[in-house]
Amino acid sequence: MVEMDKNKKSVIVLVGSSAEKNSNTGKLCVTFLDELKKSAYSQGSLIQSEILYPSDWNIMPCRSCGTCFRKGFCPLDQKDGMAMLKNKIRKSDGIIFASPVYAAAVSGDMKILVDRLAGWLHTMPLIGKTAGVFSTADSNNGDAVTSYLNKMVGLMGASIVISQNVFIHFGTLLLKDDELLNSVLKEGAVKFWEGMGGKLEYNLEQEEYFHIQNLRFHKLLEIEQQYPGLSFGEKRIWEEQGYFKYNSLQEVIREKNI
Picture 1 (cartoon, rainbow, N blue to C red):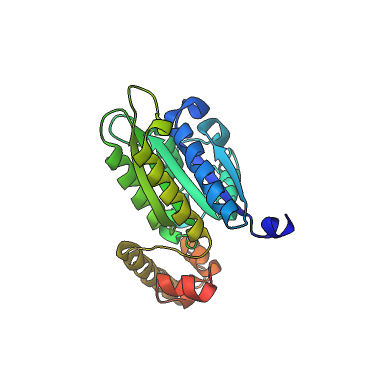
Picture 2 (tube, rainbow, N blue to C red):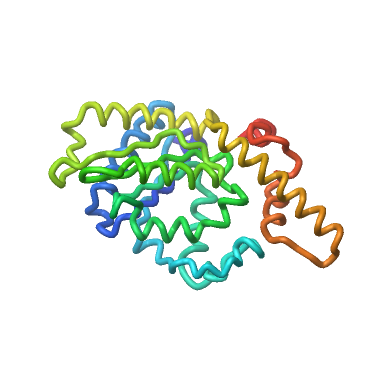
């Protein structure tokens, strides 16, 4: 048991459904977590998981003030549950973003969450973390939701190892009767566990995006040096994360031994 505790990994699941625990999206995530825990246990390890629903987030909509981009922080974080939520995400080894399809897009709750994390799209604090993306739909546009979440979570720096849309059968998630879906979830759980163990997957878009952001922040650093007293919040965060000394995303992973 001591050895298992030593190898324990933490996973945060963010379910953007107003139906919360009764939602098909939530049930899908519970099933995936069960498979993930089985994969970990087979390797002598444990998964510590927490599923958070909109009522747990308790966050306000973005006010479009731009403070996160200019100064590197959100003034709303200390007024609602966002500071707590960000802290949980930062401390986790793995993150799952899951949303039902509402009007051909992510749910309003999920959109509010992504909007409040907009600053992370520039500073990429999730580099080295394993992520999964899920959507549930009655009939269509599931791919639109997973595509959107893949892009957002990917630009935040996470390694996305499973991205899956699930269609609902007459309003019911029939996981136990769907051998193909269960096979996909089991395979995804194995990849998720391997990702948290260091087997990360990044695509060319993420690599290019890291390069672009690195160039941008180097330019802002030059401007700060040219004009003493001028300070860019996002540049400061990039520097605090230690990204300036790396030339590529893969170099960050390799040299930090994430």
